[in-house]
Image 1 (spheres, rainbow, N blue to C red):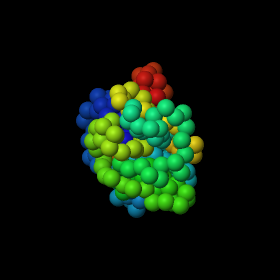
Image 2 (cartoon, helix red, strand yellow; image 1 turned 120 degrees about the horizontal axis):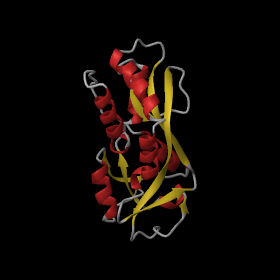
Image 3 (tube, one colour; image 1 turned 30 degrees about the horizontal axis):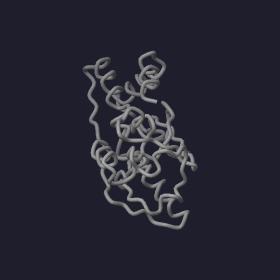
Image 4 (tube, rainbow, N blue to C red; image 1 turned 60 degrees about the vertical axis):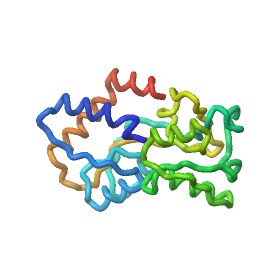
Length: 203
């Protein structure tokens, strides 16, 4: 989700500011990324930050909320709020196993005594969007992504899933010059008018 939401804008700004520095980019879900960072396999991660970590330094960037997404013709499309317990009979379209959102949703479903009926798992936001808009299932995504979508209704969950998006890196890790520059760039960029306009526009 972050790849569709924030990363392209941040990365473009960084490349414009530091055209001679090179970053090698790898796409993973936030759940998997935390392990990769803690194991020292990556320098930096732009992720949904864990609530706490003894092994990671974290730089919060922005906050968002995970919402239920249904087609405009779905039986729940007029609801203002909904609980996971009401969704037992729905077909779920979820992000893949490495995503934070998937783990949280499945855990909540299990808390209410059922396993979600997962029709499809995908890392492609556009695929998920098209399936949901055509009434083939429901999904859960960041509110900032879904606000401007046609044919899809976003509904707040009664079990709020507030998230913080930010940079994370392993404590005491010797970071490359490019990684240090990227952290510095993000710190400055998130204070800029451009970033404020992006966040207001998206959220």
